[in-house]
Length: 303
Picture 1 (cartoon, rainbow, N blue to C red):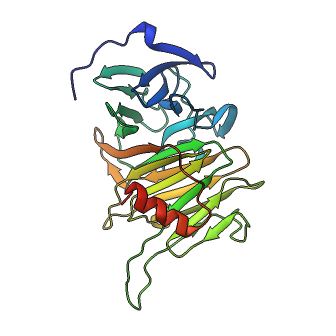
Picture 2 (cartoon, rainbow, N blue to C red):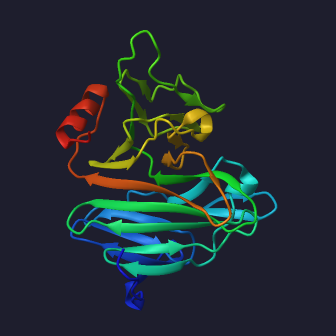
Picture 3 (cartoon, rainbow, N blue to C red):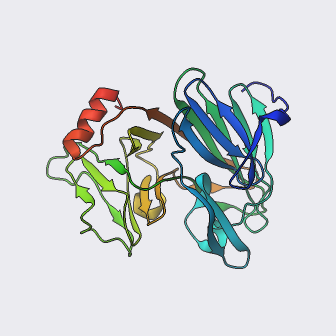
């Protein structure tokens, strides 16, 4: 990483009531909050709309600590999900350092957990690609068992593509799926394919599925644009949520593509990092079935 440079005051805009930094190349433009977070609030091709959900009024109750403002966009949480710990409010300004083609955003230490979140966001110089390093650091006095959990909230109306393992394991099973208690597996907008699950993001009640994802990517199509996020899967590591490294949640206001790092026991002063790579593609036809999904994988060389 290059030495940190001072942030230019002229590089800020107001979005959803928050002061945001801009990060852009010839393809993409991002808005990154510096007055709350760390959060990425907008992601778009230069001539297209924001792909990320915009939720300035959405909040979650954090028992004993007030309310967490979601805002929409992309955030870092720590698993496992426990409201009094996971939903810690993050409305304070973040520390910002600039480096070549990106920013490092660091949150204040959470008083209740002793954890500190940071996101290092780097935009490719000449491609529609973003690399995000999510980090949790334990500043407390005791070990903390947790995992970095990267969550991207997107607008509804599109189709999520959730790749499944294709490995031939003979007479043994080759995959597992995790369903939450509120998930209805008979939804008509859910296609259970052999190699792909396709989910149309339009529901009246919440839906969530998780699974170990050795293929290492998730995708979401909306209005001709395909958003792909990648994260490394560590086959010999343990994950929260019955072994889920990838998850998809949807309700009537947004859909989330989520990736998790393996479970870590952070000693005082230790950190855990989780890297996602985002890729965006334009002029993509809507995938209707898993044959279309496979054709996209081959055409775009996603694997």
